[in-house]
Length: 403
Image (cartoon, rainbow, N blue to C red; front, side):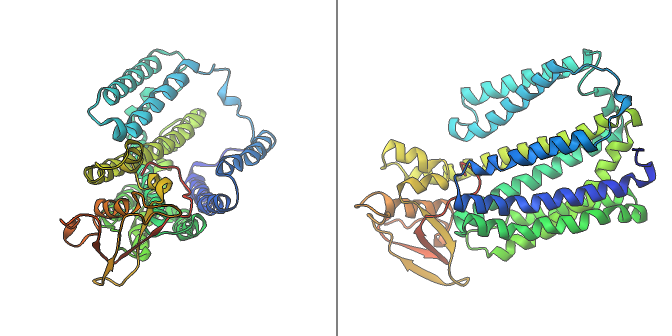
């Protein structure tokens, strides 16, 4: 099979980006369906037959490249990169539980830094490095790699947080939450193949700049999302973000591929995939940890009278409250309408008087849904909650999170 001509590379990458977005559109819906009908581990097992099919199809259909030669695999480099990224993500995820300035957290970050340094040293000295650091001397390669990593940091991070918002705040079932996210991925599937036309007309620099700028606009809009925001606001924030991602990913990938010689196209493709995965993993870890830290800081002062194990669960995230008959705060009234809710002790589901009433009140306080920004000074026995309702949690979430 002859290689794709350079003048057709942008169009081919645009089509690939659209197909990838189509796969992303099916993911949340499939996951939501599996969680509502089967064991939670099925969301991982469902990929096994797809992986086997891809391996068989790849072996039969993908042509072998004689240009690879007999270069050995850089196993030490691969191991160091896995350990470095794994340790870094672990440190970020565990920081809210141990404290960002705690000894455990600082030690984990130090180990990650040492492993990353060892990886860079190994790649610099290796005769056949897994990642040729000399490629970063080309501005096209380095800037495009950074742009892709940042874009996927934003996209995967917001996907993760919006899933929590739809289920734990608005009260959507996993399948409904997945269907709610469907138009977002479909937008990318439609727009991504059109990006090469924009590049031809306006140039890659302008298109990428506009795309990343629109992504930033979407992130700013997300920062104003509140517990009483309607689901339509999620779409309003995602519209500029998804348009920006759609028009910028294809030219950024093209820049990476055009910056490496043809016989090293595999290195460019691998780097393109690596920056996406690294950016996505860090986006979920960093934004999830920041959300958990903010939530914990707001709610823990109100949990002093609870049992230690209950206080630990409820102090680390919304999902942890479900074990104790927790609550979901959902938009339930027009803006400006106040409803008086009796949040009395013993309101937990399916049991005798417990911490349920108090947990409901302090959870609402942490989410900032009280009039005036805080709980009433008279205690937690009865509160006024603005434009929200509180009800028992019964649905499962489609992502595992401490937030």
